[in-house]
Image (cartoon, rainbow, N blue to C red; front, top):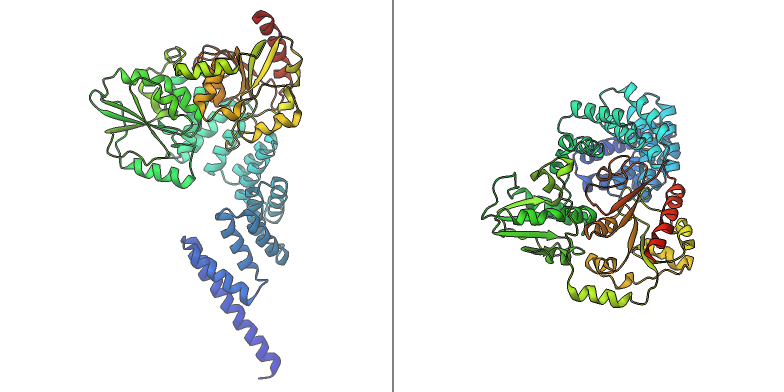
Length: 508
């Protein structure tokens, strides 16, 4: 055997060995044995640093574990070595999307479709990227193309429904959610979105299932901690509307402070059902407000779930399901929150020197919310409010978005650094004449206190604010100002400025 023939044979044997290693790694990967898969991919790269499959699959593994930038780096190297693989371009798009680089994700998906036009899964992913970029009409078109390729694509029916709902095409959205459920009856997210859509339309009889299905316990803490709470609750008995007399009931707080504040109205009704004990497992930022309610005991979510201290548990968001469901039957008497007298006195003294009509302002939703962007308004957009005579703006914004205030240099009374939790913020709100807020917990807090509150509502609207109404059955003191067009806050703020001038004049 000459040297060239021997070298060729050795190369073929090495290639065969690496292919066998990749196959073994992929088998581990698909079976969830990720450490074993990673080790094999790394071994392959040690022998062949430019191996397409090892770079690609190691990048997919990095993406699955949330290391999106590493995934981008690895899969980019892979596609440089094989620019004709549609799956690799799709996965590179997913890595870019995970890294929130949606423009680059779009380009990858489109390249994958050039290579494989009938790749329905890529159409689905492209639709998600287009939705994230705010190009909803294009997303609808792409989703419909995916369904032409794969009519029983459950996830696409669901995602198309969400985009159509945002576009205001509610009948078509409902049909999409219904079709997703017809194809997959246990699709909980589709069931929840269908119920939320019915609530949005004011159909509380049909939408009531939302309150039973939607439950993510506690927004505070890590995802692992929340999963642990769910696992602990799986072994406990959930309240299914059986009599409560002499029983011990645990209420478990939700993912959003606004949800909890909204549902606190039901606690007096529960107490009237003869409970031996009413215990609330509360997020720390709401614990003191719960403690002010008669007959309520509180355990903060910084503590372990109080297993053994209750007979039944109920998610806070489920409470409406246990009471009359008609829209007119919502218990809307306010205020249902009570504050300690010393707290009220503290804030009365704190704002004593603030002259004019005192108007609280909250302009941004929490960053962790998936709808943060559409529910938040840059502070500079509120410039017209500064020109209204006879009022003084008071900051109610917490978190990173509050940094917009000193950057603008506006003269706004700001003591939010003194507000440790929602009880302190409630004490501040109690001393105000009006609250102006985007759709976030501050609006719920003001409404629960019976304080006049003007809500800036996005075009898409949340289910609880329904459609077209400028009032709320949940909060009698609320007035809703709605976007006429998606993303346009100018018209809303102009309308608020006009109404605020009248409010200030009447308050003088």
